[in-house]
Length: 531
Image 1 (cartoon, helix red, strand yellow):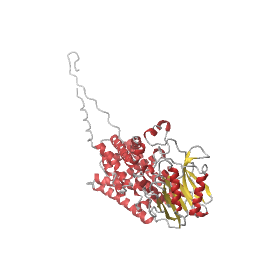
Image 2 (cartoon, one colour):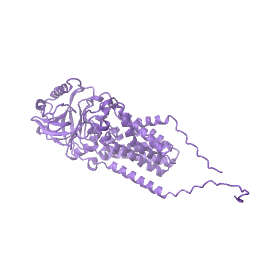
Image 3 (cartoon, one colour):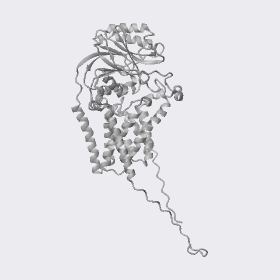
Image 4 (cartoon, one colour):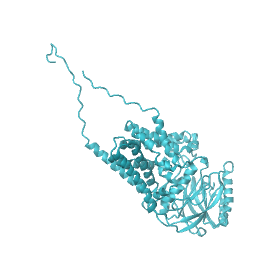
């Protein structure tokens, strides 16, 4: 009997490959603060993509996409380890799965013998696939939009102009497109037509940045306001909240006589509901009279009128609390609430997860300052919310002239987190065309103008101080505020067309020929001639 030869087993990948994939996935984290190697973002994905394109199979590429995603999440969020301990490994493993389809996509468009058409498809499909990963993980319940690749360009003026046109999403698309073009150049350097397509892609990216720089002009200044920022610094231990409040008072008094329109305190600067503590409300009212400007504080306490703990921006004028109040809507998973607490409540025993869930606000609020604040309209955000592009965009559409983020990073003072958090203000300002004041209880306080450029000095993590900023105003509307997340819809369209084309290709593929069975030969016998 003749038998078909058995297929040779595939060679095992070298042992170094999996650690290399994890390290390659972690590499882009160096583009974010504190290292701030922003230029690295344009090539940081190349090693990972080169590994993915040489994966032995689509399944293997998905595995390496997952492992690279784990490396990325651990590197970008490594400062959470003291709070979450081993739990961060589980979170990274779950969120890393989002990169598994992207790994498969990279291999599918880059592994076959390259052609100009396939190279052009890769320049569109790979950035679109990456953007879908960022979009999904930007959901609050999955950790929110922290570490979006486009956010690494917060101090690059042409990128900020690009953000005003299409938000951080458009910046991400361009950064990943450059990485894809470089990957094509490295992997197909000897194929002139493919190299030409890659060079054309790089030229388009460069031309896009240049045209944004020349065409999208900074919003014209229409006025100015003077804002005081008070950052008391780290004060923990027994009586910490009261000592923090007292130091905030002392620093605020130093701002008297400086012609202020607004004073901003950081997140959790007041540890008791002002309705329950009229003495605190009276002290803040006296302060507002002293500096002749309203004070925006942040109350982290149980409410008298509603059950539960809220984090609320509260405006206090010279006549006392004005009634303007914004309750934080998007909470930090595990830090301010535990998702599915009945299943994951054990996280409180292995880390610093919230013992009790904070309550959520229901709607954004635009506050109009009283007369002593020149009638200015401000849009408050609390801490984590400054990471969400849609929240600042909605506040501007509702009429906010200045965005204010109140935050605190006392738990992560010696990590990359404070600088990363402060950098988000530049993106939100550029996207919305409105200045943004990032005031921290502890951390990095900074102010950015309507074009995203920093206005005045920062207050660092090692400083307790008060500073005054002259903040430019504008009435211009950016394309991003007007048209929203159109790059996301464009990326969805690219992937839908690609999926449709792949489906048509599979339908048109000819059916495989029936396999031939092995022939059986029998010899004739005297009992059965011819058999």
